[in-house]
Image 1 (tube, chains in turn brown, cyan):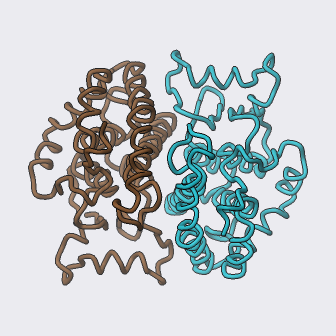
Image 2 (image 1 turned 180 degrees about the horizontal axis):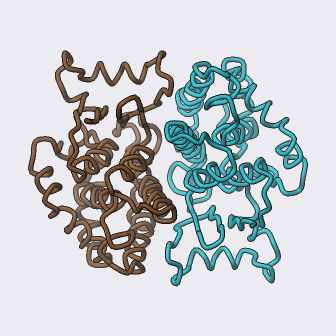
Length: 240
Length: 240
């Protein structure tokens, strides 16, 4: 049994949340669009997106192929993987809670993306720089503290205080790790300041990075470096 | 068994997607924050949001209380209700597919909201009008056709052609109905044009509105009218 992941080959993007879960689970997967075109590549991804003959067509990647199943939407893919690979609690309440945390992280991620693209994803950053500055200023002042404070509170409330849900790692922990890693890249000044305030969140980020499978992954060439085409972008003028 | 829904009392907002599912299911629920303060009211909602003693604290409404469970995030609540009230397929593939559709609708909804608030939810519309015009123009030209075309294609592919998933109503159909109703309110000019193009989507909207329980709900005082504080707002300057 192996999985096929379809995602844009040059950015971490939303695909990274799926990669982290697959890596932590230690399961075999093929990152299809990163292979040469003769072995899939971007054409294979585009075919799925065009896919007029696909029963459950996806609007956008990431897309996971598991046997006959074709699953899209990051949180949906993680819901599926979480159950199969012990990356989420087994009971209904726990599963719903982890899904809720993941959806809240997705909201956070959307706001992070829109700091540099407040007008449209299809316009260059340079064409929306002024609006980006305004949006990013409010993000730094209001929105990032709101979300980080929320996850800090969740960690504080949770008995274990090491994980977001219960006393075991879940995919929500992996996703929070990724968001924090991205914020360190994109907003280093802000994070220097906020890191002191949200110490449980920062400790979780550090602990996930040290898990053997995640550490091996991060050191490998499978991990695409952060760059200026992804969700997390370093524009110093947005990081005040 | 009855449910308690917690959502802002003066707007449809994201709470409306939950209300539509509860109404179609025909189950008893209390819309807590719409009651007088002595019977709950907004203070009861604020208490949940502040809730330092809550095991699984929500960041934002809608929030559904079901027995001991407290569930937040619209798509998460619908995942739960869909299983319990036959508003989603029973098999795993079908459940994931409906969740995927719902998450795609959530993305669409976020983009609709941001047409009038591209800079920040905390700023008045008047303070971000210029950016809103730019964002809305691209929404009307690119984004709305992209999403509507996608759902049109899903309906076309599906055997029944009356529902998004399989041959039975799911909560994703109810949610698509709500998005179309909101777009008719907020972007009447755009919808007059696009309605001709995406006829299956429009037919689904009409069919859902005629379902006995939904029709009764829409005619009741439980349905809050669209207004200028919600996600869907009618600003003629954004509807070109």
